[in-house]
Length: 139
Image 1 (tube, rainbow, N blue to C red):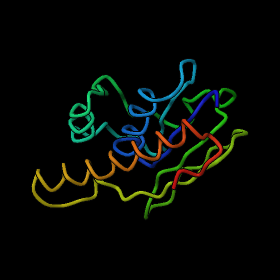
Image 2 (cartoon, one colour):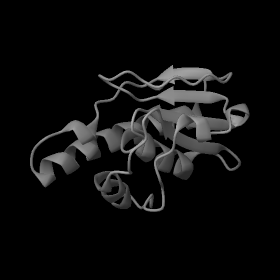
Image 3 (tube, helix red, strand yellow):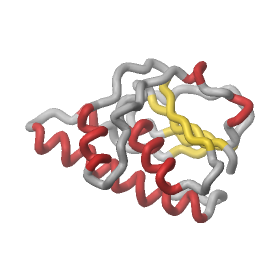
Image 4 (cartoon, rainbow, N blue to C red):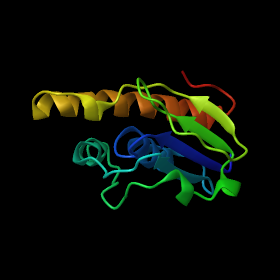
């Protein structure tokens, strides 16, 4: 595992949280990126729920897939649940962890934050498993 790319559509929530969590858990020297097919802005809820566990992604920005150095990516993990995931054309092992989009949750601020926390906690579980056993699907 040299370079891991997390992909979603907007690169605003799931993939940004995955990037932050993976950077905190991956072995030294592992490169971690996130990107989307239609990048928007990093969701403040994603920043807030990662801050709760000591991870700061406040300096992150949404990125397009084309901005990622394809030759350095050896694993691509798509996170789209109900929407169509972006395609990565580089040579890489591909995994799919379909997770619901917490940014799509309507309701109060507390309900939206709870949705982000559920996805954060699931990502943390899967990424912790993945970095200790890179060949696993971590589902």
